[in-house]
Amino acid sequence: PRQTLERYLEVLQQHIKDPDLGLYTPATREFFRQWLVTNAQQDNERKGLEQHLPSAEEHISGTLAVLRFPVENRQASPYFFRLADEGWQLDMAAMSRLLGFNHKSQWFFRTLEHEFQFAFTDLRFDDNGFPHR
Image (cartoon, rainbow, N blue to C red; front, top):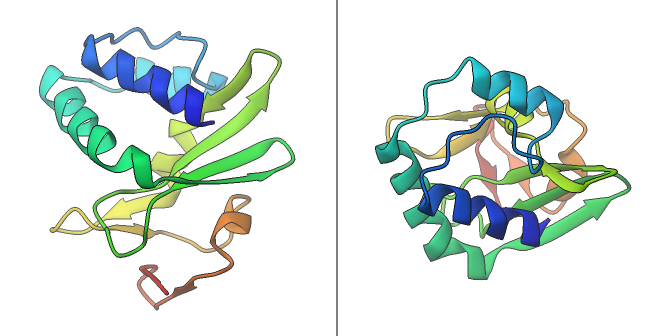
């Protein structure tokens, strides 16, 4: 998963907007076909990833994985992955469905009932879905 995220960082750096990249799950490819991606969005995500990737924790359970960052940094949302024949693929479609952001760009879970929950068992979540140690 970390290598896939590092490849995604290169996609962001080069402003590649092809929705059919092999590092995306099929659902993510469909998601990006419907989503306008701008250079500014890619630049903002790249800056955050460059800053926080060294502190990422990798959690793997079978064909699912999560790269997450220290919970104290609420602007650094987790990334979800699925294992396919091609290797680990980013599941941005699941991220969009499961993660929300408040007015301070702090992430929270829209629901706690999801298949990626295995990576968050050491945390508790408040009534609004925000994680806490």
